[in-house]
Amino acid sequence: MNDINNMNDGDQQVHSAAGNDCGHGGATASGDALPEDYRLLDEYNDVHMHVFGTPLRVLDHGQGVHVWDVDGNEYLDFLAGIAVNSIGYAHPKWIEAVAAQAAQVAHVSNYFATRPQIHLAQKLIALAGAPEGSHVYFGNSGAEANEAALKMAKLYGAQRCAELGTDKPYRIIALTHGFHGRTMGALSATWKPAIREPFEPLVPNIEFVEANDIDAMKAAFDATGKGPITAVIMELIQGEAGVLPLDAQYIRDVRALCDEHRALMIVDEVQTGIGRTGSWFAFQREDLGGVTPNIVTFAKGVAGGFPMGGMISFGEGLSSLFSPGTHGSTFAGNPLAAAAALATIGVIEDEGLVQRAEVRGEQLRTDLRATDNPLFAQVRGRGLLNAIVLKRPCAHAAVDWALEHGLIINACAPDVIRLAPPLIVSEQDVNEAVAILAMLPEDLPED
Ligand code: PLP
Image 1: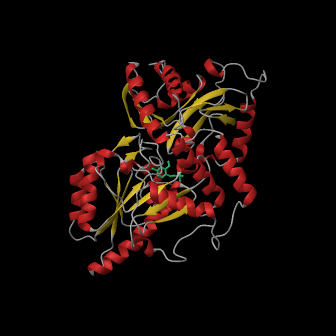
Image 2: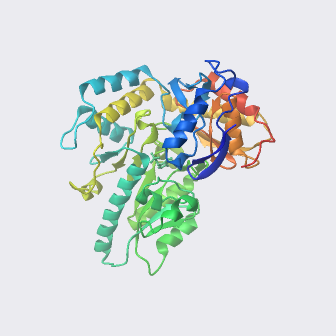
Image 3: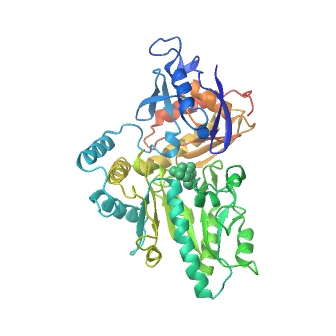
């Protein structure tokens, strides 16, 4: 057994990379004594920086909600590349669109535009219900999306300070437990001290306020002797923190405070967006009663596995803060990524996957609760972004156990398992996953 340490989003995880010897993962397809997975992971470790630790398996191909490793073992994927593969693996429409675009033109510089990029921006503005005058900036990842949003917020902050005639620095508020990415700006707004503090000093004047505590937010806005708060960045469901939802009333109250103080509300929908939580964007859910952000960021599921991220600025005015040269990226709006995103969104629309996320998510939570597994303390989530809170901090052992029984999930905290399957997941897929999770042993080793 090669026991190894796996670092993912700051959580240390110990697992066995070679546990193919029980349950669903049974005999290797090739019958080799030494699985290829084993050899390749050694080679991986020889040549990769260890920011992710040793991967759990070397994967070879996927189809729908299933994926196979290089030894032919099959897994039901309830992680979807961490909420990325929204239409599953190898969807024929996605393949066709990406192949056609690759044959036509794969990349142009930002001195030129392409049809897919323009059509995608139009589509995203429409799906977000963003008003006339709204604009899109495309990047390549979630961190980049938030980086762009924070740069826009800084320009806005400088403008507000000039309007208010203050020389005190404007402040940007982020929430405790929030995760916005690992580039310097996004990291400055990411709460987890273990991943942020080694890189300090980061961007100044970003302050953390207790999530879900409106009095703390009011106190931050009302603080005397400090510069104005000009932006608040938040996830509506804190995904990396363990799928922690913010209260609807809290979200509405933050919006009201932002309105009162003319601060921007930046909603990070990198994980929650593009249908995952049962609406195109989480801010559109009914119990929020029409809360509208000033900036929304997206990435992960938007292009069904092709790297893409970006932001939408809502309404007239805001986007004019960005002028030529203020921001950019070589790959921004890349036509292959845009074609992949258009195909992904097309499939989500054609197959009714936003509604399906709601229905299958409800099934998943109800059926998990009904298992009465004594290890489960709580099942929570919305749509197909869900978590099981465990009674003991054994989430990494649970991930290994599930993998050995043919189910991919992940641990986003020592006592929290995350379930974020593709939006195409069927009733039977959910039944299968629940049947495996129902058997999770109570006495798994702790982290
Ligand atoms: N924002 C949120 C809410 C996320 O969940 C993540 C990634 O998990 C990011 C930003 C960073 O995205 P990326 O890893 O694509 O940079």
